[in-house]
Length: 231
Image (tube, rainbow, N blue to C red; front, side, top):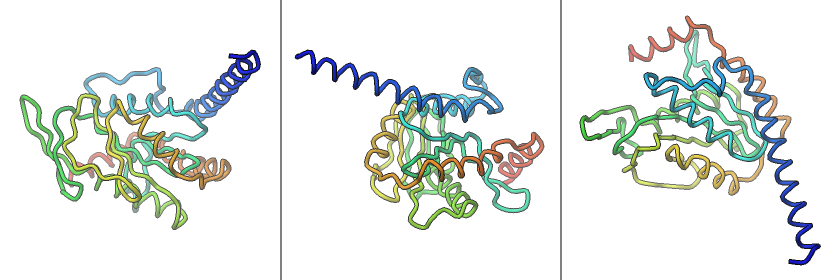
């Protein structure tokens, strides 16, 4: 390569690194007040929290400027909430992420009420996570009064050792189904195809409105869990 070409390559790499570093600093700024930090790894006895932790680590490696909320309790009525595991506020829209830290063979149809997980030792049925996330999106849309043509994307993330036997469908209106190993790539691919429709100021406003919903009291959380178990 010529000296000028090498110079351009070095400058390009430097600018890319600087942009990546700025984006990381922006994201970190909005993650320092979480109830548990990224340096605190949940125990194996809490697979749900451990799955969310792993999912969050992957999401934070997505380049760009965005805002991340975790365990966001969206009001659905008087003292009633629906919990979003991870909410990504991005220039291309909102990404509602449901983490399912489940291993084994996962069978189901997108419209089924329940799906089934098979392992070598047992069989388990669980509520269809696509339907579950649709409920989260419906509550979020009503709470923030998102523009009718705004983009809210459903993302369901399974454990790294899971194998999905669910029909794959892509395009507008379809949830992204992926595993922990692929969530970063799937998000990047979707964001590249989606036009930017949210300004940085709008993203900040949404973040500031939703962030307090990540700090329910211990009693409010226990009441929420009790209502889920009753249903």
